[in-house]
Image (cartoon, rainbow over all chains, first blue to last red; front, side, top):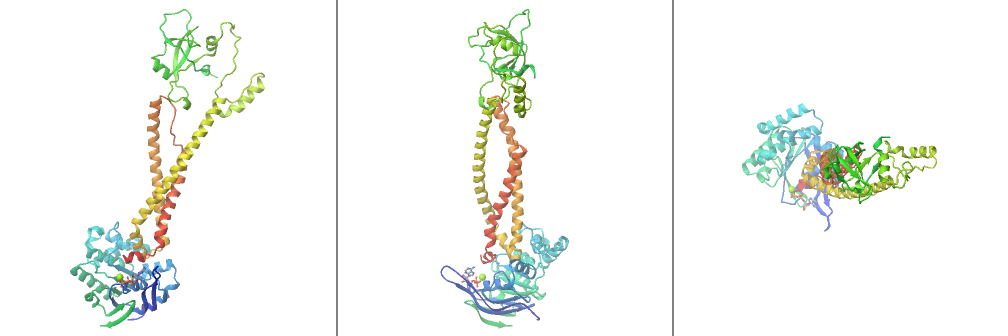
Length: 228
Length: 283
Ligand SMILES: Nc1ncnc2c1ncn2[C@@H]1O[C@H](COP(=O)(O)OP(=O)(O)O)[C@@H](O)[C@H]1O
Ligand SMILES: [Mg+2]
């Protein structure tokens, strides 16, 4: 494990609310090294998602520094941060968030198209990725024609489209039954084994136990860290 | 100037009578198509016309043809009971019995010009050449013009209200449309599309939809134009054109509709994009 993909130094996130500020994440220091596999556990509302969003440059810390790929994220504007997400970070969510009007292959092509990949190349890459997640035969199906597990696998293929260095997954098995959940977990393991750093937020202990580092959060802080 | 230039709208006591062959061939007249239809007149028929309502001193004429009268919006719905006579026949018909032929007084003569824009120059010309004759642009035409000015203002008012109402409707519609795409936009933002990139996309879509809508509207107007004109021309038995989509009107509609549609789309999207993409991920 060489250099850090993303390094958070004492980051906090405070949401100013009418009833008073909500401290979602407080003083968290965390480094994700290249190729690492981290799980973040903790009770609902402890700040897991908020931390993940900051690591993924979707949300910015209220304080502390976040360095992605040696770049201080706080100095980047919307465009630069968007492009950073586009090229280097993949997201997977509990509720898949595929674009319903596009086929599986087109969903996977979209981030590549935005990154400027030529048409033929991205079509080939999409088919390759769909085969990788076991959906080679479903390339031209729309999300509505796919099951939950299949949609999540397409979402994973899309997240990998631009060969990101970091894959962030927020409760990726939350909407799936146990068997499909395990298939998706196994797929994520494989993605990590193939070299992509992986941070999974989950309250499923079985899914968490697959990671090499398991962080437990409580009230916005990292309460406990276990390594395997 | 053609022989049938002089128009007289007469209250006619009109008797379509069939007279046997008379020695002198009666003078010819033209009658309006509508009059011919109403009274069952045909070309070649003999009719008796008089200048007064009691039919005194009526004269016989032969119908040489029918004509389509110049439509007059002020007399919509009235059957144009008009005939056109040669000037000498008209004078003979209307002359006081005590007035010898050739000494009639004509107080005014209407002259129709091929190019109405020439009227002022023509009047100047006549005034310069014939002392004692006073030529000016017809008051009737001016009066009609002012009617059209009122109509046009009325149209502008309707158009303004329509556009204002349509804009509100359009904005509501685009807000609904954009709201429906909240999730899509959120996904695109999470994937890493810059806000500006999405806004440009939305703007292009807005332009496309607005242009398509404008073209559809024009096609609809063009189709309606024929139907409306045909219906009212039938209803009022006139050649008057009621609706006309001119290239200028079409261009104006597009020039208003397309930017309006694009602005409405962007305005609706703006609020959505300003919110953080995070919102989506939270749900
Ligand atoms: N956008 C937001 N506005 C206000 N409060 C928020 C927002 N996002 C998260 N929070 C609050 O921050 C805390 C942590 O939320 P979250 O990170 O979603 O927790 P978890 O993912 O562990 O369930 C919660 O109390 C939540 O209500
Ligand atoms: Mg969460």
